[in-house]
Image 1 (cartoon, rainbow, N blue to C red):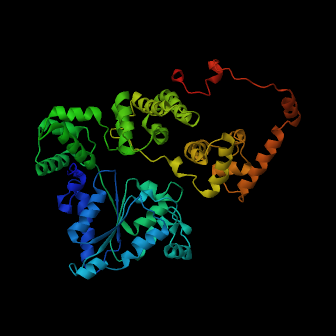
Image 2 (cartoon, helix red, strand yellow; image 1 turned 60 degrees about the vertical axis):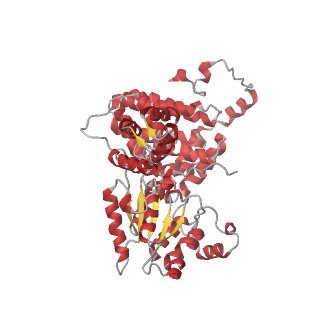
Image 3 (spheres, rainbow, N blue to C red; image 1 turned 90 degrees about the vertical axis):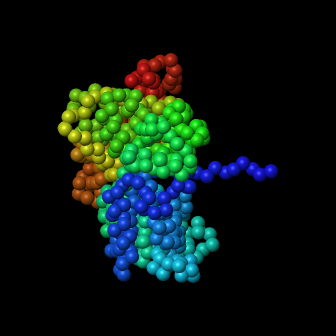
Length: 511
């Protein structure tokens, strides 16, 4: 007896095999065609790489594969699930970029064929752009156990730059968040410029409703289904421009409805499904600020491509330019409550804190009317997330704080470090001569300098270190400490004393 038929994924079955069959982003496709035409000329383009950036589901990876099919090129692909350190990229991509593929050479079917190198989701390559020693790379390549010398993504970004410099074949890279590729430290602009000197950047946008209608009709016609116009509009209305999610929705609703899809089937799908799509953070914040509805704002935030912790940082940065001082003061307590709620996940298993942390921040941002400037407000990347990632600034401070707070270094780096940098930023009112926070946290003078980005060897650094140590000596009363240690009784914490616990445990009453 034969088993049940395997249902093929429609996103794979209907994947375009040429650029001409792809919808939306016409300007972007035009630029890509011009780049491809240069590869058909006697001399390749100066920029031999193409960086396709944009939100998930708009067709970046699909485009790269369609190019390979349309032009008859061999495709070498490395994706985010594979090891992509310097040795792995050198072995799989850099060497393959130097010559025509053996398959094309043997078949002779395409004398002018190329080997297209596809590096998918390059923004997920970890680490910096620092180079790895050449001998280490070669030993890793020749070793049977690649983990012997290079692990993870070590040197991957540096090898990516090397690949773009030496390649004789076209390179296509895809990413969702270019800032993650550049890095969030002070050198992000330099990293960006180095890569874009060697590659073109094409930024994809979400696909519009017209193009989604065309794709939907094309797929349903091919599968032998019909759909009510109202049902299709309802399906599209709930989609932010994610083609992959649209095709999956069509496949699911076709199973619910049969050969003809009506509005009832679409509504049934909407009631039980969670959309497999995300809204980029810039668009999400624009929509939240304009929503005027706490419920709608919460839904937008839940669909954004940032988690509640990250969104809170974006709110903290952009609220200052979106609202006037009075509105900012009125919504700030809610933002503080959101921050406290999110912080509780490190103290207990109250997963509801994740919900309240996101809901409070979104509703606060929608509660007040933004300043009327006659156009959408400019949403910018929080600068305090870009600063301070240099090793000399972070290592000792983060280790000290992690040990004193009893938490992981990763938690300190992601949750506390950006806020400490913002507090100590001179452009935001920070004063390097104010040691109160550093001393309260038990940091050393060197750590205090690191928070302000001041080196120990500078004249200013030496002066601050001396003053910092002198103040510690002045503040310490050793006789009082000894007397306190000898006489202080053991303190018992009463769980029913809500006033004493108010600053320690997040409760909804505090909002």
